[in-house]
Image (cartoon, rainbow, N blue to C red; front, side, top):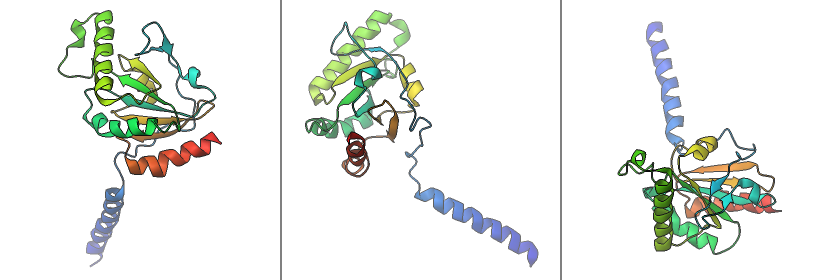
Length: 194
């Protein structure tokens, strides 16, 4: 009888772990950067060919960094919400156009010169925003994805809430929904803006 109780006990423990695991959201990946300084970078801007963007440009402001790409299907899902939210003017949204050419499996970026890649990225990003609306105060171009790596991006879209001192206060993985905007992002932005 005892030899059956041990495997039965192990089975029930595994069943409890499985039950708890099934209630977790696989998109809720904790960021090791939470409450740490946002990684510094300087990238070319989409809107102004001769200018760059750096997180230092946003010091003193609470802001959102939204990682997106025109080839990203989930980005299409969240984009109308970002456009409508940006019109409220509650917080500036900075777009990080992530691997626009290199992330698209239909294009062989290795055959493009750096200038051609930059120009193609600009054309595609501008066309996408012109067709869908531009919620961004600034768009920075992460051509090779190195900034995304520094931020721990493993998929697009991802959004970061960054405070006035430049600390990452939240990472939202996946498309922003009306619920996540209302219950998570906006309350945090309001608290950090005080």
